[in-house]
Image (cartoon, rainbow, N blue to C red; front, side, top):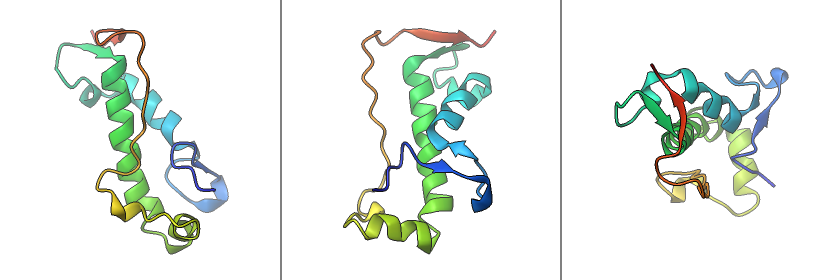
Length: 106
């Protein structure tokens, strides 16, 4: 079964990210100023999640769903990723509160 959040690419696939796509962008958020959506020089859990979620959506659209072989993995199980405009949409349950700061950008 195709699982967009756990999509794991291998070196032989020649994709830009090797390993976990989600983890790659989650970690990238810590060093990318664009992740600081409100510009307060602090990264909240929600900002990091949103940055990673949008990056995964773009990656999947640009590299996975544009490749017929990979797209077929979804279509073969009866799921059309183009049926939803913002797919995949990772859901994170944040029990830490809206202002839980993960990193100061200063």
